[in-house]
Amino acid sequence: MIHAPPTMLKTRRSFFARQRFNLMGALVVTAGLPFFLRSLIVPQDTFLASSINSLMFNVIAVAVAFWTRLSIETYPGNRSTHVILPSVIVAHGLIVTILLMARLPYDRLALVAGAIGHLVWSYGLYVAVQRHIRYRIAIVPYGAVDRLATIDQVDWQMLERPDLAEAATCDALVADFSAAVPDEWEGLLADAAIQGRMVYQVKQLSESLTGRVAMDHLSENSFGSLVPARGYFHLKSIADLLFALAILPFVLPLLLVIAIAIRLDSEGPALFRQRRMGQAGTCFEVVKFRTMAMRSPLDDDRDSAITTHADHRVTRVGAFLRRSRLDELPQIFNIIAGQMSWIGPRPEAEVLSAWYTGEIPFYRYRHVVRPGISGWAQVNQGHVASVDEVHAKLQYDFYYIKYFSAWLDILILFRTMKTMLSGFGAR
Image 1 (cartoon, one colour):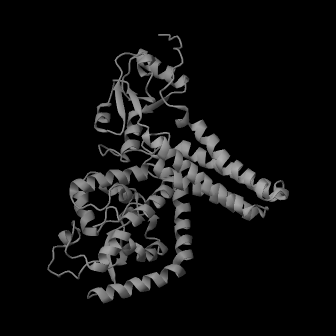
Image 2 (cartoon, rainbow, N blue to C red; image 1 turned 135 degrees about the vertical axis):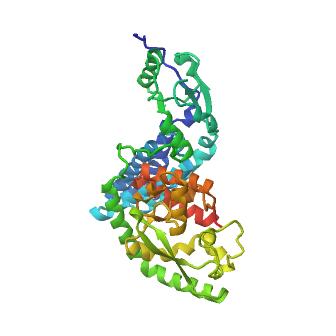
Image 3 (cartoon, rainbow, N blue to C red; image 1 turned 135 degrees about the horizontal axis):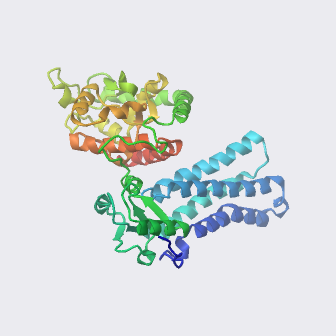
């Protein structure tokens, strides 16, 4: 069946919500404004190599941050609030690194003003415009699209006939590409793609909006493999070790102060050690600060390994350490020993891991990567205890493994900082 190209359709998105306005404004505020102000304050410095280099590299920083955000925000579940800060900091950090390594002259004030202006512009545009945008997505009514009805971040419109005019006010279309879709509907999807309209696969869109991977069966990553990218895995292991060694001299005094506070607050050792499950199902002894009163030897192993809401065993100092996540800080020694990473699925207690493996299919798959101090589940869900909560947490862990990448680690790092300040999910 041959389709005549339909009339080009426009969505309801205003000019101020479009990416080209975002890019133009960022270039003006980040690169143009600092250069212009320098020309007013010190006119003779305007066309020095340092000023020209700063102008050029501020433009590059905007381009890098814009490309990063455009790549990450292709799916609507990747919210701007989670992406703005890391993308801007990484972009400007990259250009500063290049300038320093190349020993090129630069205007320090222009670079600082550019980075600040970039952040102010990006967050200002988000607050004024982008946060009020609610996506409207048209659904091709074939295959496993019913799962979308339970996701309320988006306004869904079920198409009744294969006509793009029905989707004129929609931002995108979604379909189940694995389903048997009639020819006329496949023609609709092809026409939408030709026009530059976003056309999503239902599985990936659902994962993006929820941040979780469905547990119906093991799910391959974007490379069609169950094993995460080995190149990045080894690079990450080296980076983990180098960063841990670099900050260790600064962390040791803080560890000492916290240990003294714990000993003064309650009886027992400052450190808590527990057997936990690591990569490839290998057990190791995790080290963290003790945040609870010493337990009785008669306590049930499985029940005592679970922390409940407002648990009476948590000490005064322990409550603060849990909210701020500082109780995890001694695990820097586990990282140096190669047992853990800064970012990854949290290692479960050995006794709980054995229990969950018996209750939840594919639970052992989370051991394919090295466990971490913080992870995707921790910044999205927080502490869990019941089997149902663990099932949801495992979906977050599978999402991390499927989309295992440097960018996801950077995103988790920045969201972890927010979690430490807010105390989200602590028990």
